[in-house]
Image (cartoon, rainbow over all chains, first blue to last red):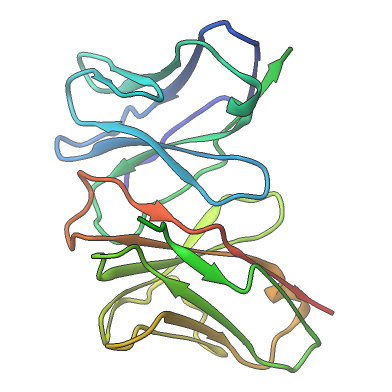
Length: 109
Length: 116
């Protein structure tokens, strides 16, 4: 799977939007962009994924750049329960799903 | 619909003992993946199994570690003669599809292994 680059950490205030960036300049045409998050002491939780078009679900939105070399996970109103490590993952290989260091999101009340 | 289940949630073993970690995939899922997460690190893929078959074990240590997914019952990750470096959280994930790069993968809550 191609490599992704994310900031190590970000902070947000409660009830404000959060934009979590991910760079993936070596993405191939068949790579899907997946986002997972891991709350403290829990297993990873699926957030959203997309290929080319922007995607929305009840948890978040995924904005994908036109050239697909970057994407942004958008939490529309951060809550304290959104504090987690967020992983941006490119999926081409069907077996290995590579988790990098992710972005640790802190939400301040 | 119950999610991916793992047990035990916590396991303490002394050096040299065996550890058995169990994973029951989501109903209808026949593909199981095991990951290991060392403290303060990301998850590392270990092995991918389908019912009765190991498909990809490229992330498994060559010695002491084995995995199975029998026709009946949960998937088992077995660690023989544990050492302190095996202390980690072990997560299981499942998927209904063989080619799941375009779909989600559901994870269990993990088993935290502590080797004394």
